[in-house]
Length: 142
Length: 142
Image (cartoon, rainbow over all chains, first blue to last red; front, side, top):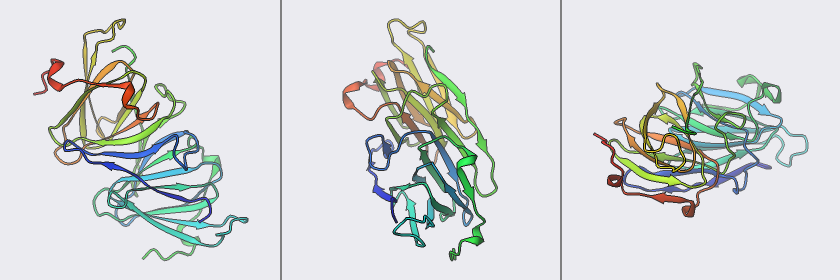
């Protein structure tokens, strides 16, 4: 999908506890720092749809497993009308970079805790995000 | 301890999964963004001591429980020679800001997974950090 980046991340093994990379300011996909926050998503629950008009998301899942679905409604995008599904976890440890204008929803896949970290390019601002009821974008979550 | 900041963080309840604040660029203690990474620390294991000469650490614990011990050896610090103990977890959900020059070690307290997020002011650079064997700074970890 246009502007969406999936970047493999290093997990550095250590007998006392591993170190997990998330994002460096020199990484592709880094677009400035506004805020870092966690979002938990319980098993089988879905949060979304949400579309940011300014914020670039950089999403990492250090706990559990989260299925992200992206929907491209951008008028000038070559991938307009398409969906992209990406499932992240420690066993598929990648960073998902989402540009503004793309609808995002995500579902808790792991049956214990699921948590994402978003390194957001701007701080939370309700005026730059749009919400849309889950059923209004036709995606089969089953 | 001089320059060390402990900031309570919001946990925003949500039936689908809570949102947990970590850090905004306008927060006290934010000193620029270099890198974000996770460090796991297994039960009863201790990582440290480490002292950064440039990096400011902003530490959050979204999983498990981690005991941080800081030791101040800075020549011009009013708290020179002192230790500070801070235990972070979701039930004591705060951000610990550590300025350069302070020795840091941390221990895994929870008996499942313990993980910290560091929002570091500069990217990892082995030349700006010093390591010191655990037993060389006299702290009773028991």
